[in-house]
Length: 343
Image (tube, rainbow, N blue to C red; front, top):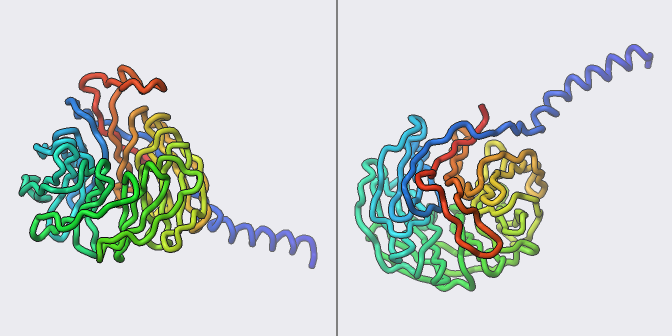
């Protein structure tokens, strides 16, 4: 083959390969787009997002603040949620469920009107994470002090079972096929639950992970993402319980989300004040592609799947957390919701 022809062929091959190379390289240009001041006093924990109504639920101690994200404004307060940690959403029934940690109860509210419907008592002690499981049509609370999970029948609005767990549960995720998974913070383990029969199926080690908190799931590839206190994310095979990857992340993570359409995992790190952006190259291979600066204390987040944006809540520290165990204090009125995305 002549040199000119070889050169032309090489250029043609490079041209054909270029779009694939660009498509396989993730665009990592996220940043803080806006901040919405909510003020007020009280603690905070998980956020939840109603994608149909475009409402963000922000847990706030004894209440839940509701933000209309497209209008960028606070629209309502759901009261009476003592020690609230999380929100579960049942779109078919138009119901939301808030886990009230201080009263071992769940506040039920209407997703359309945002009015409180009832309060369900009798969960295990200190319900923390909460989810709606589409396979069983039940609501599950994960009870931190009780080392258990409670199962709620949302038709009758009653607790029908409370089942012991072998450790302290943190965040949970459902595969929507009859399995629920939960991190055990004090044992660095994952538990697999049969949500159709309310029983524990398996208990898996998370290897070198320490104190796992946030948990997300890739249902298509059967992968679980546990963020850990020792600056790593453990990726687990949800079918066989094998840790298939460990990925470096920031300090103080408390939540993680998976954006399936973008093949991205996002870990919110409250101590380092940033988000670790991890690209899923395939089911077992991951790489950090960006670290987004947010602010210290922004430790939990939720995904807006339509806009591929992230929402976080945070305060400005007056006295930051210290290594001596002293409780931090916030600047009064500094509570804020951050929106992170691509400009």
